[in-house]
Length: 331
Image (cartoon, rainbow, N blue to C red; front, side):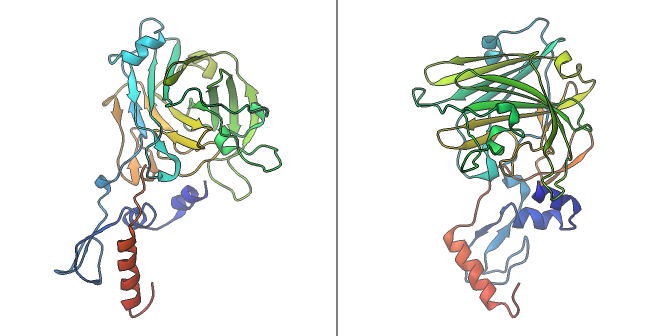
């Protein structure tokens, strides 16, 4: 949380931040190294671009479609477009410029429950899965972001999908539901100490209660597995009146992959300031501000990073180095 906590209190302009931290710069042109200013170029020098619309952004806000009049089956959710929102773009943590393993997420609801389906592609379903024997409830959040009491103190990376729900986005109360490829399911309620890193291990769960009042089923197929969640509204304190926070995450043990439709900075227990603002009505089914500083549908402002980071190539780095050497004073 340190980077986003810094951004909240920083006076750095968002344009500068997008250029420096998001590495959204591209150098084009064939002239020799010249002194370059943002968005400008000399007649013979390269052009520096930092247009945010050229970057890939994660999901930060959605609007659900009309509710079902009866509980849907999993096969209905996978094909329905009238009541179901589909999020098909998952991004690797840290903006890693490689495609995440294909994941199809479907979200819908009725008067009694929220329904979520993960469709997780795998090119080798016979690949062995790890047996994770630690107490899942002792973890501080997402298994991929939680350390265990092993000799090497490394976080587990099970083949797992997680759903985090924040019924009131102004209250640090969260519900966590999970299912693994080998059919284990978990649910709990967490209260977190802080949404800002206090330098003393903040953003840790200060209380945890097991939650059993939900259904989760795992189905293995030839080249994919499905995790279907039915979470009654009463399990999370009742159906929210307007909107709620939602964070879906997938982890893969075989390659340590951590992905989400949200642009996630780094693997952590719970990115409490990156929940998707999920509305019941208003606007299009999928929406969101595509900028480093965005205003959500509720009016709240949020810092976010691009979902995919493009680093400068070797030639561009050489040009930057030569420009630095030609400066009268270092930067």
